[in-house]
Amino acid sequence: MASLDTGTGKFAPVFDKDGVRLTVDDSVATVTLTNPDKRNAQSPALWRALAAAGQSLPGSVRVVVLRAEGLSFSAGLDRQAFTPEGFDGEPSFIDLARGSDDVLDDTIAEYQEAFTWWRRSDIVTVAAVQGHAIGAGFQLALACDLRIAAEDVQFSMRETSLGLVPDLTGTHPLVSLVGYARALEICVTGRYVHADEAARIGLANLVVPADQLDAATRDLTEALIAAPRDAVIETKALLQGVSTRSYEEQRAAERAAQGRRLRDLAGLGD
Image (cartoon, rainbow, N blue to C red):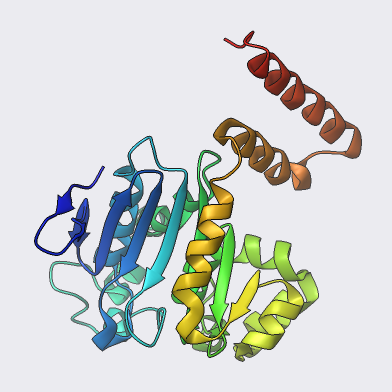
């Protein structure tokens, strides 16, 4: 758990590196993107920091809030990645393309780790999104279970327009949320999805004025931690498994989960 910084009255960060800050207040953790001057553009260093933040969560955490400083959530991948020089101490994307298939695959898999832990069954994750959420920024918002969007939000999947594909785990949740046809159209055109459409098609659970984003996120967080933790974990796992189970298999999964909950409530659990 983060310690209280008596100088500021706020919780000191557990982790603060490469544009990512993690703070923990009992059962709620907050991961903040902290490079507003570059509209929170993303890089391999930031992805490693996001992965490290996930690994640093104390066991007490039930809800993780993802937010960003400044006017934009994240403008996507820093274009420096496509220059011959790349980032200091990092292979450029051009160098990666010239390498072996195994190295390229392993490197992309490492980058994806920043986007995968948000759907762990033992936590619920909420992205508070304002301004631009483009490319990798859009995929980072999609990595979370829930999204609250400010009225000025602009989601866009630009990878295909640049000759690439969305490869940071965003395709699965996008199709799950909006359906194949709309997901294809959003990705291939690279157009902006604004707040009203995001709410209508299921990308955003809630849309609020920008000056109410923090308050709305706090309200949702408080609601999410009101139910008993084990019941939330079981419910999330049930819902996550729907797409891979038949109707009868889902019925069986519900029965097994409810049996565990009843035994636990009766004091008969393991």
